[in-house]
Image (cartoon, rainbow, N blue to C red; front, side, top):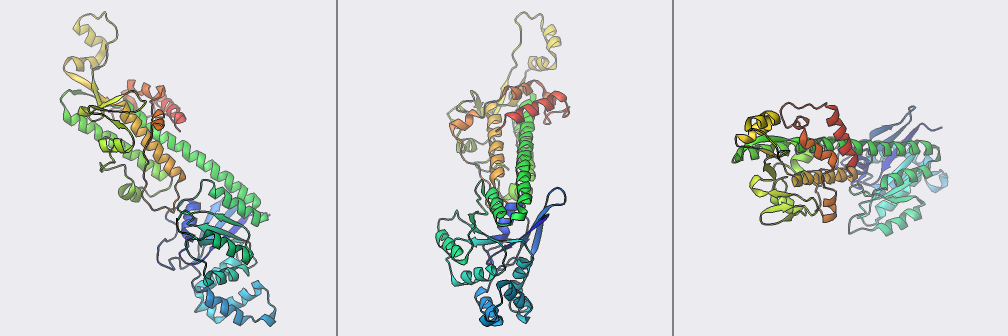
Length: 452
C-alpha cells in the first residue's frame, strides 16, 4: 500500500506552478513568484503529513524553457531504429553530456518526474498554443507517469482554454481540471485531489484522508475565527467610561481604543489564516490607520459599505439604532434609574453606587453605539469570509464589498452580546478586566456560535 504520494509540478516557465502550490498548501511564502522567466531554478519540495506516517510530497520544478531544442536532441540521441520506449529515451538523455550543460534545467524536471508517482502539468491558458508547448507535452508524456493537466488563469478574459483542451487530448492526456491559482473555485481543491485519485489508484486512500483533513482544518479555522470576532465584540460592547458631557478628548480616546481593538482582531485573523500580518495589514488591507473610506468611525466608510446617511445621524436599515455625529459613533447618555419611589439624594447615591454618584456630579456614561458594533461585526465577518475563500497565491489587496440591506439583518446585536453592557470588567479596554470570568467566556462562546 502506498504511504507517500510524490507529485511533480511541471510546466513551462511562468505558468503559475509555484502559485498553484501556494494555494494548495496555504503558504504565501513558499518559493519565489515573479513575472520574470526562470524564477524557480531548483527543485523545491513541500510535505503534507497525515497519520500513520502517510504523506503527500509536492515537488516544485523549474520551468521547461527550450522544449523544441530538447525534443530534437532526445530524438537525435535515440533514433527510431533503436526502438527505445519513452522512459528509456528520457533515461538516455539524462546520461548524456548536455543533461549537465545546455539542458541542465530541463534535466532537473525530467529526473524529478521519473522519481515521482504522477505529474501536475500547469498551463497558462492566456498563452496561445505554440509548437514549444506541443514538444513539451510530448517529452513529458514519454515518462510513463500519469499526468493531470491543470488549466491556470481561467478567470482571465483573454484565454485559449478550448485550444489547450484539444492539444491535451491529442497528446493523450485525458484528465484535465480548471484551477485558477489566484481565484480558485470553491470546490477546486477537492476536484484536483479527486482527479489525482482517479489517476493514481494506489494513492486513493491517502488523498481521501487528506481531503478529510482539509475539511477538519477549514471547520477548525472558522470556529477559531468566530471566537476572535466574538471576543472583540464583547470587549467593545462592555467598554464604557464615565465622562463630563463636553469632554471631547474622552470621545477621541475611546474611538482609538476601539480602532486598536479592531486592528488586533484583524491581525489575529490574518495570522490564523496564515497570511502575512505585516504585509497585508500595513500595505493592503483597507480597514486601518484611519485611511480614507477605511476607518470604523469614518462617515465615508459607512457610506461605502452601504449604511444609510441622513443629516443628523447614521442608521442601519434594520438595527434600530442611530449614531449621533456629535459624539462620533459613541453614545453619551444617562443610565435610567429603576423605580419611582426613591428616598433622599444621599440614599440614592449609596444604593446605586459609583455610577449614580458620577451622574449626580455631572458625569455621563460614554459607550460605543449599537450601529458601530454592528458595523464592526459585519466588517470582521466579511474579512473572515474573504480569508476563508482567499488563495495564498493572491497578492491583490484585500477589499470588503459593499453591504446591502439584507446583510444588515445579520448585524442586529444578539441578546447574548447585549448582556455585556452590564459587565464593564468583561472588556479588555476597561481597567480591572477579568478575562477568565466564566460568564464572560460563556458569552463569547454563545456569540461565536451565532456568527455566520
